[in-house]
Length: 226
Image 1: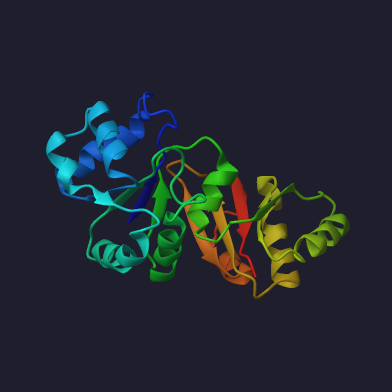
Image 2: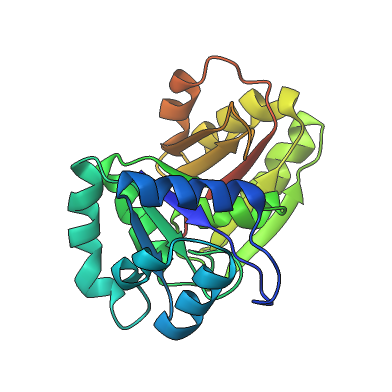
């Protein structure tokens, strides 16, 4: 499993409690922790009260090392290790080399999740693994079917990654519209993010319709770029 660990932008601030506890547990279990820059990463690690003896085991993962490490990390996760991915500040895999690792995890059937982060749209984008050098936040579509379909047709003309939101009771209708208008364009669906019931699914609209039993849940939907 890959767990994204958002960190404070200001390194003087404490790490979120859930993330801190998970990292302590990871140290006890011998799981993997990757950081973006060794010097500030180690400094934060010690400031947050995490085990000093783990400092030398932290994996350097950034734009210079990602390509060489991705396959090795995938194999370790497949063998049962959990990887905790951290950045220098903010959300890993958002405008970050971790995006490709998340993408590979989805392709290899490895679970991806995140410790608490307080912006569901950006979190969904990072968890999707889709390239997002440019992306469009379309937000909520019109409620009426004809207007929604017309709007969706226009939105789907964009080649970039697209983020959509809507009320839980319109999720099924939205998936059906996407299956009708863009059946071959892959999507990512993040449901009940950061909750115990969190469900992340990536695939074609028709396949996601088949997988989800309860379609009335809070969600963010990300449409893949072309």
